[in-house]
Image (tube, rainbow, N blue to C red):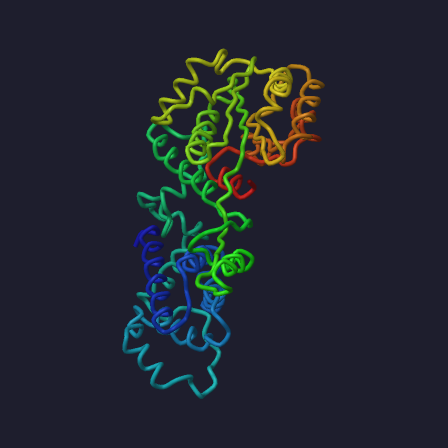
Length: 396
Protein backbone atom coordinates (compact mmCIF):
# COMPACT_ATOMS: atom_id res chain seq x y z
CA UNK A 1 0.00 0.00 0.00
CA UNK A 2 1.47 3.44 -0.86
CA UNK A 3 2.54 5.57 2.06
CA UNK A 4 0.00 8.35 1.32
CA UNK A 5 -2.82 5.84 1.23
CA UNK A 6 -1.67 4.48 4.61
CA UNK A 7 -1.67 7.98 6.10
CA UNK A 8 -5.18 8.63 4.78
CA UNK A 9 -6.41 5.34 6.26
CA UNK A 10 -4.73 6.25 9.54
CA UNK A 11 -6.53 9.62 9.78
CA UNK A 12 -9.85 7.95 8.90
CA UNK A 13 -9.29 5.29 11.55
CA UNK A 14 -8.43 7.98 14.09
CA UNK A 15 -11.66 9.86 13.28
CA UNK A 16 -13.69 6.68 13.88
CA UNK A 17 -11.86 6.10 17.15
CA UNK A 18 -12.67 9.65 18.32
CA UNK A 19 -16.29 9.13 17.31
CA UNK A 20 -16.42 6.00 19.46
CA UNK A 21 -14.98 7.97 22.39
CA UNK A 22 -17.66 10.63 22.01
CA UNK A 23 -20.37 7.98 21.80
CA UNK A 24 -19.06 6.43 25.02
CA UNK A 25 -19.23 9.79 26.80
CA UNK A 26 -15.64 11.04 26.52
CA UNK A 27 -15.49 14.74 25.53
CA UNK A 28 -13.36 14.92 22.36
CA UNK A 29 -13.52 17.97 20.10
CA UNK A 30 -12.49 18.44 16.48
CA UNK A 31 -9.47 20.43 17.61
CA UNK A 32 -8.42 17.51 19.81
CA UNK A 33 -8.64 15.20 16.78
CA UNK A 34 -6.36 17.51 14.80
CA UNK A 35 -3.88 17.59 17.68
CA UNK A 36 -3.99 13.79 17.90
CA UNK A 37 -3.25 13.45 14.17
CA UNK A 38 -0.31 15.82 14.56
CA UNK A 39 0.97 13.92 17.59
CA UNK A 40 1.28 10.69 15.60
CA UNK A 41 3.97 12.39 13.53
CA UNK A 42 6.10 12.92 16.64
CA UNK A 43 5.93 9.50 18.32
CA UNK A 44 7.33 6.10 17.47
CA UNK A 45 4.52 4.52 15.43
CA UNK A 46 5.98 1.07 16.02
CA UNK A 47 5.72 1.46 19.80
CA UNK A 48 2.19 0.59 20.89
CA UNK A 49 2.53 2.01 24.42
CA UNK A 50 3.95 5.31 23.12
CA UNK A 51 1.07 5.72 20.67
CA UNK A 52 -1.42 5.02 23.47
CA UNK A 53 0.08 7.71 25.70
CA UNK A 54 0.41 10.16 22.80
CA UNK A 55 -3.25 9.86 21.82
CA UNK A 56 -4.46 9.96 25.42
CA UNK A 57 -2.50 13.16 26.03
CA UNK A 58 -3.36 14.97 22.77
CA UNK A 59 -7.07 14.09 23.10
CA UNK A 60 -7.03 15.54 26.66
CA UNK A 61 -8.74 12.51 28.21
CA UNK A 62 -9.60 13.02 31.88
CA UNK A 63 -8.01 10.55 34.36
CA UNK A 64 -11.40 9.11 35.33
CA UNK A 65 -11.97 8.12 31.68
CA UNK A 66 -8.59 6.43 31.22
CA UNK A 67 -9.94 2.86 31.70
CA UNK A 68 -12.61 3.48 29.07
CA UNK A 69 -10.01 4.99 26.74
CA UNK A 70 -7.70 1.99 27.17
CA UNK A 71 -10.54 -0.42 26.47
CA UNK A 72 -11.57 1.35 23.25
CA UNK A 73 -7.93 1.77 22.25
CA UNK A 74 -7.48 -2.01 22.44
CA UNK A 75 -10.64 -2.56 20.42
CA UNK A 76 -9.67 -0.10 17.68
CA UNK A 77 -5.90 -0.33 17.44
CA UNK A 78 -4.76 -3.66 18.91
CA UNK A 79 -6.95 -6.21 17.10
CA UNK A 80 -6.77 -7.49 13.60
CA UNK A 81 -8.51 -4.99 11.39
CA UNK A 82 -10.18 -3.41 14.41
CA UNK A 83 -12.90 -6.10 14.26
CA UNK A 84 -14.09 -5.53 17.85
CA UNK A 85 -14.57 -1.77 17.67
CA UNK A 86 -18.25 -1.83 16.65
CA UNK A 87 -21.32 -1.16 18.75
CA UNK A 88 -21.12 -4.65 20.23
CA UNK A 89 -17.71 -3.98 21.78
CA UNK A 90 -18.76 -0.63 23.26
CA UNK A 91 -22.01 -2.11 24.56
CA UNK A 92 -20.13 -4.95 26.23
CA UNK A 93 -17.95 -2.36 28.03
CA UNK A 94 -21.04 -0.63 29.39
CA UNK A 95 -22.53 -3.95 30.58
CA UNK A 96 -19.40 -5.30 32.16
CA UNK A 97 -18.12 -2.00 33.53
CA UNK A 98 -14.51 -1.52 34.50
CA UNK A 99 -12.48 -4.77 34.35
CA UNK A 100 -11.81 -6.11 37.83
CA UNK A 101 -8.62 -7.94 37.14
CA UNK A 102 -5.40 -6.01 36.87
CA UNK A 103 -4.42 -5.21 33.31
CA UNK A 104 -1.28 -7.00 32.25
CA UNK A 105 1.66 -5.23 30.68
CA UNK A 106 0.64 -4.48 27.10
CA UNK A 107 3.02 -5.62 24.37
CA UNK A 108 4.87 -2.84 22.58
CA UNK A 109 4.16 -4.22 19.08
CA UNK A 110 1.04 -4.28 16.91
CA UNK A 111 -0.66 -7.70 16.62
CA UNK A 112 -3.03 -7.02 13.75
CA UNK A 113 -1.96 -7.51 10.17
CA UNK A 114 -4.66 -5.12 8.83
CA UNK A 115 -4.12 -2.46 11.51
CA UNK A 116 -3.22 0.94 9.93
CA UNK A 117 -0.51 1.55 12.50
CA UNK A 118 0.95 -1.92 12.01
CA UNK A 119 1.23 -1.40 8.26
CA UNK A 120 2.65 2.09 8.70
CA UNK A 121 5.17 0.80 11.25
CA UNK A 122 6.39 -1.80 8.76
CA UNK A 123 6.76 0.88 6.10
CA UNK A 124 8.73 3.08 8.49
CA UNK A 125 11.00 0.19 9.38
CA UNK A 126 11.69 -0.45 5.69
CA UNK A 127 12.04 3.13 4.39
CA UNK A 128 12.86 5.22 7.46
CA UNK A 129 10.92 7.79 9.46
CA UNK A 130 7.84 9.21 7.74
CA UNK A 131 7.18 12.96 7.74
CA UNK A 132 4.29 14.83 9.36
CA UNK A 133 0.71 13.77 8.81
CA UNK A 134 0.20 16.81 6.56
CA UNK A 135 2.31 15.05 3.89
CA UNK A 136 -0.80 13.15 2.90
CA UNK A 137 -2.54 14.12 -0.31
CA UNK A 138 -4.19 17.47 0.48
CA UNK A 139 -7.76 18.12 -0.43
CA UNK A 140 -9.14 21.29 -1.99
CA UNK A 141 -9.00 23.07 1.39
CA UNK A 142 -5.40 22.12 2.13
CA UNK A 143 -6.12 18.78 3.84
CA UNK A 144 -6.78 20.29 7.28
CA UNK A 145 -9.97 18.89 8.84
CA UNK A 146 -12.44 21.64 9.58
CA UNK A 147 -10.28 24.26 7.89
CA UNK A 148 -12.12 27.12 6.23
CA UNK A 149 -11.05 29.23 3.23
CA UNK A 150 -12.28 32.21 5.23
CA UNK A 151 -9.76 31.41 7.98
CA UNK A 152 -7.02 31.25 5.34
CA UNK A 153 -8.11 34.62 3.97
CA UNK A 154 -8.02 36.17 7.46
CA UNK A 155 -4.36 35.24 7.86
CA UNK A 156 -3.26 35.99 4.32
CA UNK A 157 -1.13 39.09 3.90
CA UNK A 158 -2.72 41.93 1.93
CA UNK A 159 0.15 42.04 -0.53
CA UNK A 160 -0.45 38.38 -1.46
CA UNK A 161 -4.17 38.73 -2.22
CA UNK A 162 -5.18 38.18 -5.83
CA UNK A 163 -7.83 40.10 -7.74
CA UNK A 164 -10.36 37.29 -7.15
CA UNK A 165 -9.97 37.63 -3.39
CA UNK A 166 -10.61 41.36 -3.21
CA UNK A 167 -14.40 41.15 -3.02
CA UNK A 168 -14.34 38.46 -0.32
CA UNK A 169 -11.76 40.41 1.66
CA UNK A 170 -13.83 43.61 1.50
CA UNK A 171 -16.91 41.76 2.80
CA UNK A 172 -14.91 40.45 5.73
CA UNK A 173 -13.56 43.96 6.38
CA UNK A 174 -17.13 45.25 6.54
CA UNK A 175 -18.01 42.59 9.13
CA UNK A 176 -15.04 43.58 11.29
CA UNK A 177 -16.00 47.25 11.09
CA UNK A 178 -19.60 46.47 12.02
CA UNK A 179 -18.38 44.59 15.08
CA UNK A 180 -16.63 47.72 16.32
CA UNK A 181 -19.63 49.95 15.66
CA UNK A 182 -22.07 47.73 17.59
CA UNK A 183 -20.01 47.06 20.71
CA UNK A 184 -21.85 48.20 23.87
CA UNK A 185 -20.08 50.51 26.29
CA UNK A 186 -20.13 50.45 30.09
CA UNK A 187 -22.31 53.57 30.20
CA UNK A 188 -26.02 53.05 30.99
CA UNK A 189 -28.70 55.13 29.23
CA UNK A 190 -32.52 55.20 29.56
CA UNK A 191 -34.18 52.41 27.61
CA UNK A 192 -37.80 51.19 27.61
CA UNK A 193 -36.72 47.53 27.62
CA UNK A 194 -33.43 47.67 29.47
CA UNK A 195 -32.27 44.96 31.85
CA UNK A 196 -31.23 47.33 34.68
CA UNK A 197 -33.76 49.28 36.77
CA UNK A 198 -33.22 53.04 37.12
CA UNK A 199 -34.29 53.70 40.72
CA UNK A 200 -33.95 57.49 40.58
CA UNK A 201 -36.22 57.89 37.54
CA UNK A 202 -38.63 55.30 38.96
CA UNK A 203 -39.08 57.32 42.15
CA UNK A 204 -39.62 60.51 40.14
CA UNK A 205 -42.39 58.81 38.17
CA UNK A 206 -43.96 57.55 41.38
CA UNK A 207 -44.12 61.10 42.83
CA UNK A 208 -46.38 62.15 39.98
CA UNK A 209 -48.72 59.21 40.72
CA UNK A 210 -49.25 59.59 44.48
CA UNK A 211 -46.29 57.34 45.30
CA UNK A 212 -47.53 54.39 43.26
CA UNK A 213 -44.91 52.46 41.28
CA UNK A 214 -47.06 51.68 38.27
CA UNK A 215 -44.05 51.06 36.05
CA UNK A 216 -40.30 51.02 36.51
CA UNK A 217 -37.80 53.05 34.52
CA UNK A 218 -35.09 50.96 32.96
CA UNK A 219 -31.59 51.40 31.58
CA UNK A 220 -29.37 49.49 29.17
CA UNK A 221 -25.80 49.72 27.96
CA UNK A 222 -25.29 52.31 25.24
CA UNK A 223 -23.62 51.60 21.92
CA UNK A 224 -20.81 54.11 21.98
CA UNK A 225 -19.61 54.81 18.46
CA UNK A 226 -15.89 55.50 18.33
CA UNK A 227 -14.52 58.79 17.08
CA UNK A 228 -11.61 58.05 14.75
CA UNK A 229 -9.22 60.08 12.62
CA UNK A 230 -7.47 57.84 10.09
CA UNK A 231 -4.33 59.08 8.33
CA UNK A 232 -3.27 56.70 5.56
CA UNK A 233 0.12 56.69 3.84
CA UNK A 234 -0.52 56.27 0.08
CA UNK A 235 3.10 56.31 -1.07
CA UNK A 236 4.55 53.68 -3.39
CA UNK A 237 5.87 51.44 -0.61
CA UNK A 238 2.38 51.29 0.95
CA UNK A 239 0.52 50.59 -2.28
CA UNK A 240 -0.15 46.85 -1.58
CA UNK A 241 -1.69 47.67 1.81
CA UNK A 242 -3.37 51.08 1.38
CA UNK A 243 -6.35 49.67 -0.54
CA UNK A 244 -7.36 47.32 2.27
CA UNK A 245 -6.71 49.84 5.02
CA UNK A 246 -8.94 52.37 3.27
CA UNK A 247 -11.56 49.68 2.57
CA UNK A 248 -11.63 48.88 6.29
CA UNK A 249 -11.97 52.51 7.36
CA UNK A 250 -14.61 53.17 4.68
CA UNK A 251 -16.65 50.24 5.99
CA UNK A 252 -16.23 51.65 9.47
CA UNK A 253 -17.34 55.08 8.28
CA UNK A 254 -20.67 53.66 7.09
CA UNK A 255 -21.64 52.69 10.63
CA UNK A 256 -19.58 55.16 12.67
CA UNK A 257 -20.26 58.60 11.25
CA UNK A 258 -17.66 60.35 13.41
CA UNK A 259 -14.77 59.22 11.19
CA UNK A 260 -12.32 61.49 9.38
CA UNK A 261 -9.99 60.15 6.66
CA UNK A 262 -6.79 61.76 5.38
CA UNK A 263 -4.24 60.63 2.81
CA UNK A 264 -0.60 61.63 3.01
CA UNK A 265 2.31 61.16 0.63
CA UNK A 266 4.20 64.28 -0.44
CA UNK A 267 1.16 66.35 0.64
CA UNK A 268 -1.86 65.97 2.90
CA UNK A 269 -5.36 65.47 1.42
CA UNK A 270 -8.64 65.26 3.33
CA UNK A 271 -10.69 62.40 1.84
CA UNK A 272 -13.84 62.68 3.97
CA UNK A 273 -15.75 65.00 1.55
CA UNK A 274 -15.20 62.54 -1.30
CA UNK A 275 -16.87 59.60 0.45
CA UNK A 276 -20.17 58.80 -1.22
CA UNK A 277 -22.63 55.93 -1.23
CA UNK A 278 -21.62 53.05 -3.46
CA UNK A 279 -19.08 50.30 -3.65
CA UNK A 280 -15.78 50.50 -1.86
CA UNK A 281 -13.92 49.85 -5.13
CA UNK A 282 -15.51 52.91 -6.78
CA UNK A 283 -14.64 55.11 -3.80
CA UNK A 284 -11.04 53.90 -3.82
CA UNK A 285 -10.81 54.62 -7.54
CA UNK A 286 -12.09 58.14 -6.90
CA UNK A 287 -9.41 58.61 -4.24
CA UNK A 288 -6.65 57.43 -6.56
CA UNK A 289 -7.72 59.84 -9.32
CA UNK A 290 -8.03 62.92 -7.12
CA UNK A 291 -5.15 62.52 -4.66
CA UNK A 292 -1.95 64.03 -5.96
CA UNK A 293 1.15 61.84 -6.10
CA UNK A 294 -0.77 58.65 -5.27
CA UNK A 295 1.75 55.75 -5.05
CA UNK A 296 4.57 58.29 -5.14
CA UNK A 297 6.95 59.54 -2.46
CA UNK A 298 6.29 60.38 1.16
CA UNK A 299 7.06 63.19 3.60
CA UNK A 300 5.59 62.18 6.91
CA UNK A 301 6.91 65.08 8.95
CA UNK A 302 5.63 67.82 6.63
CA UNK A 303 2.22 66.17 6.17
CA UNK A 304 1.63 65.57 9.88
CA UNK A 305 2.73 69.13 10.61
CA UNK A 306 0.11 70.38 8.13
CA UNK A 307 -2.50 68.19 9.84
CA UNK A 308 -1.56 69.54 13.28
CA UNK A 309 -1.71 73.15 12.06
CA UNK A 310 -4.89 73.04 9.92
CA UNK A 311 -7.08 70.11 11.09
CA UNK A 312 -6.09 69.05 14.60
CA UNK A 313 -8.27 71.43 16.59
CA UNK A 314 -11.35 70.75 14.47
CA UNK A 315 -11.16 66.95 14.12
CA UNK A 316 -9.44 65.70 17.29
CA UNK A 317 -10.86 65.88 20.82
CA UNK A 318 -10.35 64.08 24.09
CA UNK A 319 -12.37 61.03 22.93
CA UNK A 320 -10.70 60.69 19.52
CA UNK A 321 -8.39 57.85 18.51
CA UNK A 322 -5.87 58.86 15.83
CA UNK A 323 -4.77 55.96 13.60
CA UNK A 324 -1.68 56.46 11.42
CA UNK A 325 -1.19 53.79 8.77
CA UNK A 326 2.38 53.91 7.48
CA UNK A 327 5.59 51.91 7.26
CA UNK A 328 7.57 54.86 8.69
CA UNK A 329 9.95 55.06 5.73
CA UNK A 330 10.47 58.84 5.60
CA UNK A 331 13.29 60.83 4.06
CA UNK A 332 12.04 64.16 5.36
CA UNK A 333 12.64 66.05 8.58
CA UNK A 334 12.22 63.65 11.51
CA UNK A 335 12.23 66.59 13.93
CA UNK A 336 9.03 67.92 12.33
CA UNK A 337 7.52 64.44 12.58
CA UNK A 338 8.22 64.22 16.31
CA UNK A 339 6.88 67.74 16.95
CA UNK A 340 3.65 67.06 15.06
CA UNK A 341 3.06 63.75 16.83
CA UNK A 342 3.63 65.41 20.19
CA UNK A 343 0.91 67.96 19.41
CA UNK A 344 -1.47 65.19 18.27
CA UNK A 345 -0.75 63.08 21.32
CA UNK A 346 -1.50 65.93 23.73
CA UNK A 347 -4.98 66.42 22.27
CA UNK A 348 -6.10 62.89 21.28
CA UNK A 349 -7.29 60.06 23.47
CA UNK A 350 -4.67 57.74 21.98
CA UNK A 351 -2.36 57.54 18.97
CA UNK A 352 -2.06 54.14 17.28
CA UNK A 353 0.54 53.53 14.58
CA UNK A 354 -0.37 50.72 12.17
CA UNK A 355 2.70 49.31 10.44
CA UNK A 356 2.18 46.52 7.85
CA UNK A 357 5.87 45.61 7.96
CA UNK A 358 5.38 44.23 11.47
CA UNK A 359 3.79 41.14 9.91
CA UNK A 360 7.35 39.94 9.28
CA UNK A 361 8.82 38.55 12.55
CA UNK A 362 12.26 39.79 11.46
CA UNK A 363 11.11 43.42 11.32
CA UNK A 364 12.60 45.95 13.72
CA UNK A 365 11.40 49.61 13.89
CA UNK A 366 14.82 51.02 13.03
CA UNK A 367 13.82 53.42 10.23
CA UNK A 368 14.38 57.11 10.98
CA UNK A 369 10.69 57.89 10.82
CA UNK A 370 9.72 55.11 13.21
CA UNK A 371 12.50 56.01 15.65
CA UNK A 372 11.19 59.58 15.80
CA UNK A 373 7.56 58.46 16.15
CA UNK A 374 7.87 55.77 18.82
CA UNK A 375 8.16 58.09 21.89
CA UNK A 376 4.84 59.77 20.96
CA UNK A 377 2.80 56.67 20.01
CA UNK A 378 0.62 54.76 22.46
CA UNK A 379 0.49 51.54 20.45
CA UNK A 380 2.57 50.18 17.56
CA UNK A 381 0.60 47.31 16.01
CA UNK A 382 0.81 45.23 12.81
CA UNK A 383 -1.70 45.77 10.01
CA UNK A 384 -0.74 43.30 7.28
CA UNK A 385 -3.83 41.06 7.23
CA UNK A 386 -7.44 40.86 8.37
CA UNK A 387 -6.56 39.09 11.61
CA UNK A 388 -4.40 42.03 12.69
CA UNK A 389 -7.25 44.46 11.97
CA UNK A 390 -9.56 42.34 14.13
CA UNK A 391 -7.10 42.77 17.01
CA UNK A 392 -7.18 46.51 16.32
CA UNK A 393 -10.95 46.42 16.91
CA UNK A 394 -10.36 44.94 20.37
CA UNK A 395 -7.77 47.64 21.05
CA UNK A 396 -10.18 50.44 20.11
